Length: 98
Image (cartoon, one colour):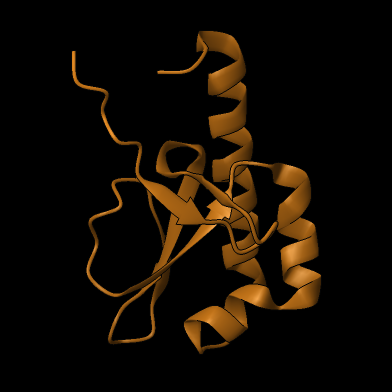
């Protein structure tokens, strides 16, 4: 049986390569709207961050998303990102890897 290739992406927060499934994509579109992209298919410039809620606070302080996306990221987005990541982590713990 042929072994499937696992797509890898670089996590902005830890600066390591990780499987795409273990990361969430943050995307900025042409109108400079920043959003969480759970499907990974939204148009625009994307950056991947780990599903670790503790890393979101450090990302906010280091402004790593601002540098990567080239725009100011509002505090409200960091709250949205934190709640999304926290929810995904809880799901993973409850249901295991899918």
